[in-house]
Image 1: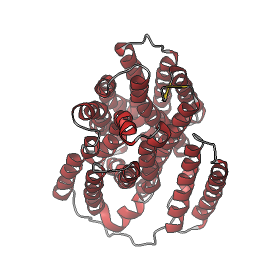
Image 2: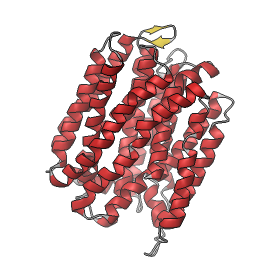
Image 3: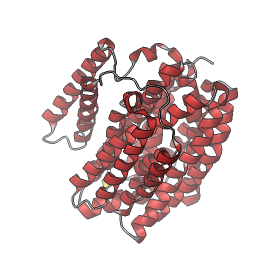
Image 4: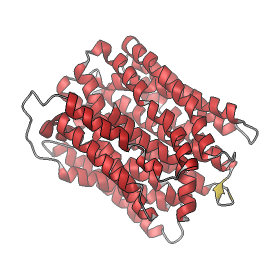
Length: 438
């Protein structure tokens, strides 16, 4: 739980600091969004390595090493002297975070029986959700009272405490560790696909003089993705076990996870920027706006977890999607007159929807699988959710960049378009989710 809290805290806390970072380094929103996108892209790329690492070294060694490394790169990032250095630190954070996050879900589904997994995910989620609930608030206070650099230092105490607890409480492996080759070609092709596609989307924000790079990057991404799928189907020990997707419930739950990632990370990126750019809120106010939504999400999580053990995952996911889409529509219809209370209420509705989605997606995806499949399956659904997050942040950033600007910042109309886009993508995922078997 502490490992996931640190990764989610790092993913969300930087958003309220973006205006200050943009001002200090004199960069535009199109470049600054790489601080969020680079983190998510690196996290997405390394997630699928978790299954191999667990088989070879065991949970105790992998998680302890990842927490120490995460602490080191977070601390170093706070001393960045250029935007490039800061982006590199964020990418390194994301790469290590990708190793840590799937391990919690893997443990829950290994330890708890099927009839208690939803409840366990709800309790685990209630703890984890403290990070995005408190992250923007903590980030806002740190930015206003100290400096944006302290948002990089913030996760360090969490991961250091996690390292101590891992070494003290997690057992050494009982079962013999497995030995088989790592799918390095698969990882290279996957990284190439993600980086080239995100770079092409980023360059689309400033297309002048970048036409060749955009077309070339897009072609390389398509070719790399095709080669990745072909390679994964023929290699003996693939990075992504495509055979798992033959289970229809697992496949449709992954499509739902893609929509969840887009909704969660797209909205978390956009809300602080929206209220600071359009409504003139300070970083502290932007963080406080997200606090009630995070607390409500923490309350909903254990309730949704218990319901996931008793009701079909499909109905809970659809309920959550409907609530989140409604929240996005409310933001899309809001004007300059929307005050702090109403904006906080819109965020609460969306977070309640996300609270119903996450435990149900986990049980709907992993419960039909065998225990020996859980390591790779948990990595896969986490990978899919993070991929949705990376695409969501880029699509939102692209929409804002092409929208109207005033004084170098996106206008209210540009944000409205982005909110409609997020709502539309979530609603499109309703059809595959409906096909998850009860």
